[in-house]
Length: 57
Image 1 (cartoon, rainbow, N blue to C red):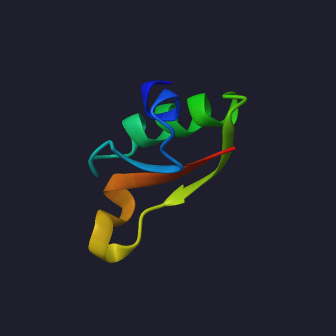
Image 2 (image 1 turned 90 degrees about the vertical axis):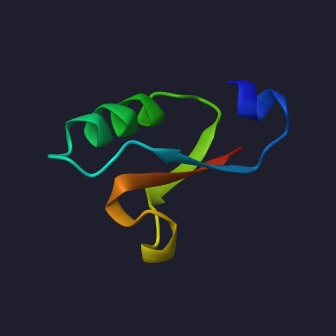
């Protein structure tokens, strides 16, 4: 919410690589968040599967 309030169009959430539990929790929350346009795994140079890129509406 804070990033959207500050008019960020895109953010990177770093949840770590681990076994994927935090990644799945983050993505479940994003699926239910009305102001999220889309999200995907970060590219290799930006965290790869240890981060998620989020675009806001």
